Image (cartoon, rainbow, N blue to C red):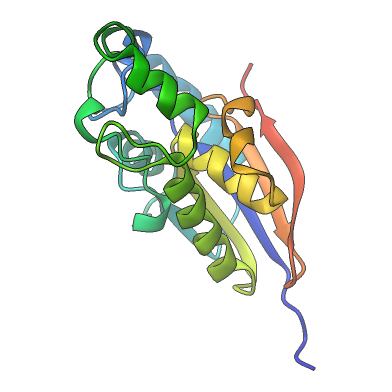
Length: 195
């Protein structure tokens, strides 16, 4: 029997976007300046060699990764949820213009009235990524959106899809997962290192 490899993931939720106060679906406008200051302090706390640094392909994850590490590899499996035609729209606008669609999306993980990706599809993608990393070995830094971080935690717990909306991950919080080569365990979840 092959020796099992221990794998550790330090997952950082990407910084708040410039227009986060508008509660937008997705964020393509970079990160908020106050968050950039906090990122400097977080970088000091995370100053250790990682086997790899990977991030989602969304703007806030890429910008956060650029401030935390010299280099980061974008991984499409870590991308933010695809909000389809709702991308860039305010939650208040969608709630007013498409209340039934929004309600369906928030109550049925398989629903995708926006034409993008369903919560079920995001969770499946995240579980696939965790399965690929199970035996990678070493300590890895991961920077991802709030939705992607939620999905990774739910995947590690093998929790039901309906738990997605019950888990709140804050921007710049840190979650740690470990693997013994057979399954994932959560060492800490959503720890806010920067109060």
